[in-house]
Amino acid sequence: HDAVDVIRAKRDRRELSDAQIDWVIDAYTRGAVADEQMSALAMAILLNGMTHRETARWTTAMIASGERLDFSSLRSRSGGQRPTADKHSTGGVGDKITLPLAPLVAVFGVAVPQLSGRGLGHTGGTLDKLESIPGWRAALSNEEMMAQLDDVGAVICAAGAGLAPADKKLYALRDVTGTVEAIPLIASSIMSKKIAEGTGALVLDVKVGSGAFMKDEADARELAETMVALGQDAGVRTVALLTDMDTPLGLTAGNAIEVEESLEVLAGGGPEDVVALTVRLAEEMLEASGVQGDPAQALKDGRAMDVWRRMIAAQGGDPDAPLPRAKESETVYAPADGVLVGLDALSVGVAAWRLGAGRARKEDAVQAGAGVRLHAKPGATVRAGEPLMTLLTDTPERFGRAREALEGAVTIAPEGSRPATPLILDRIA
Ligand code: URA
Image (cartoon, protein in one colour):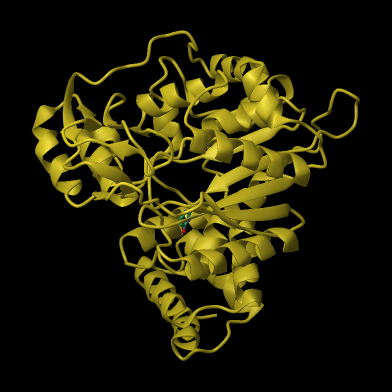
């Protein structure tokens, strides 16, 4: 095989053969195909697409580049094989759902191996949020992960280096070559990691809107359908929800403040949208695992909180330690009387990022206390001059750029107006 032939084939809109795909992924992982060749191929795929067969083969080849985890030895209380379920969100603003969801689903005897990532641009990362808990550690060996799944039933940790190494290398390349936004590449990237992880059931939360990867519903739907088909082909029971990301989830976007909000949900309270999405995703994970249960009840009666505390402690975290707080704050006030009909997710995400909740370069550290706290959500009636948001940071020179990001983020309409967007737009199975 020759890399240039594979690039030419896709450039000229021909379908790649299984052998070409297997070879190019393997050779790229080994360093025998150069970065400039792979970036040309990624751009050809972005422009000319891949068929379902090509995308499925590409996914299989990326899985084969590394190890596969196997949870089949996990036992349930009755001695049978313990079901496993995972959730993946395509990323949003204020999306802390994994934090209450993983322990919630584990309440019902389903093991939740939640491999998570760090923040990317304006979207937050589950690991960054959890690292605001004193002592908590994201990196576990496969053996530690297995032991925790057996004992606690839920683990949220970083994916090990052995899982889909082809994707790690390719994703970093796509990030700097304008080739992230290709549906076959996104779908195969996400699904190769989830299939290699070995989960039995997978629920995808595909975000749509200004704060999401996919700004429009048709693209989000195509991504969801592609991923559901890839999961089902690989024997993973996969369903997807399309959910709104035009406005942030909940009332917090940051790290420690999102942990704090997750604790409210685990204590039976918390913002309505965060609770509704957590419960719905838990119901989907239980259904896909063939397990009965009432997740709303397990939030109210403290069972999910019990699992949370054990899950955090098992990874070195102190569930009772006070969370870090930002040193400085500033308030953003409502500019007029009326109904808040729009609060733009992307603007809030960029503001939180600039305040220090996210990173500018991969090597940067995030500020645990930084972020944006919202005091009103779309649908609320507001009065001119009342607090709409609090900006939080340790480094006050960041307030100016955060305020710039928020220009035009707030839409207030005359009283009687109602914002229209539902939280859950569709279900794809
Ligand atoms: N997340 C991933 O893991 N891969 C992509 O390609 C895009 C988002």
